[in-house]
Length: 215
Figure 1 (cartoon, rainbow, N blue to C red):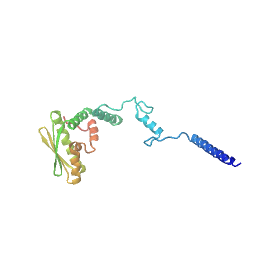
Figure 2: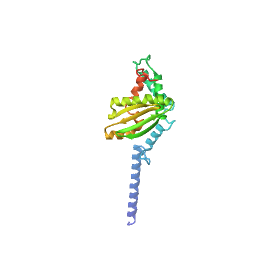
Figure 3: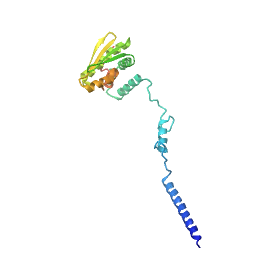
Figure 4: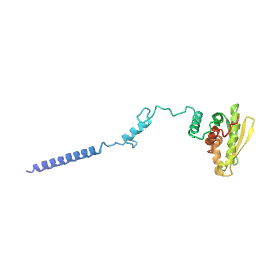
């Protein structure tokens, strides 16, 4: 009789283990498959969703319609055209997209072809902006116009002025605030040219014929 008791206890223990395993399997079956996290903390489903969004040809990506204009100036004009066509008040007899195109050419000339030699002066910077051919014309149109806009609107409390040069302009930007002096020097020439929020509105006004591009 003594040897039967350990056998009975062993059988009982096995039965408990088996029944517990069955219950666990049933519970997991009711809850659905467990989503195993990836090494980066994302589940398989999340990784699949990201793949569909990012990989061309996946179920959620649209590869039938191009979205890039192919050229940045063309894209800028395209954006203006959409705005004009969406506005029922647009006076098409005054629209002048050619003026905008010429201005964008000037922007390209100044941004990519102008030589800008910057030196620190008391309170800011002095920039000698020069070029040849069409670049000179673009410099002499754009740089004084930007300096005038900044000076009139007192952007960041800056003072900006230009002096004509035979092959460009001399630009001076200063401030009485030491923090703004560092700001100006950090921006440099092209940062100064890009400062302010008037550029986009200026482009729209030019396209509407409200501002004449100087030839």
